[in-house]
Image (cartoon, rainbow, N blue to C red):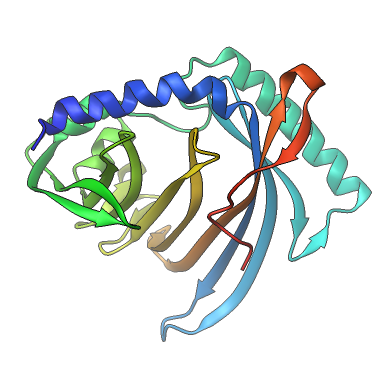
Amino acid sequence: MPDIRQLMREVQEHQKKLDQIRENYTYSSYQVVQDIDGNGQVKKTESSEYEDFFVNGHVIERKVKANDKPLDESQQQKETERVTKLVGKAEKTPRDQSIEGPTISISRVLDIMDVRNERRELYRGDPTIVFDFVGRKDAKTHGLAEDASKKLQGTVWIDEADHQVAHLEVSFDDNFRLVGGILATVQKGSSFRFDQAKVNGEIWLPTGAEGTVQARLLLLKTLRQHFRERDYDYQRFKVETQQQPKDAKIAPGKKP
């Protein structure tokens, strides 16, 4: 088995090398959020459809539909203004920093986590290196992202040939308080899973995600939500033909 710390450094470096290719791609993302009551029943469902693209290594999402209906003229104008500002921010933000919210490097995550049970498995028929991780409760952390990391546990599948994250499962194994617990507490058991796949034999892109979040808001209200995302309709642009799209050869995800 390879050294996990070195493997994850190689994953990070390989991703940086592919950033330029990613910026030639766009895809659609269909996202559904459901509010769940205390009995586990769905109270409310909302869906959104986005066009995703990359700027300076950052993914930008432009909403095109809400609850399966195209945005009206006013909504389109507001969305254009929002995306324009976000693109400007992405152009000025280093690739290894987030344009929204706190960030944490892979090397720092590994400092906070205990890695165990390294093994090889087939995932979608391809060889992967798999390992489990759990946050060290005694780790000294600074900032929201680091504080949250030591409350997590999960498993990651790394494609052995391409050194890319093929699948990730993570969950909170303890309650995590935001802003000292005054505003919200993400409760134990909240979970998330993420998938990627190789497109056109050259680039790894998201194919979907799913998660469940339970939180206490203002120490009074309990929020329970289930969300899922399906990414599809991958298209590659030819720069030399002024960004005219052509159909991608494969589309691992399809709109549900």
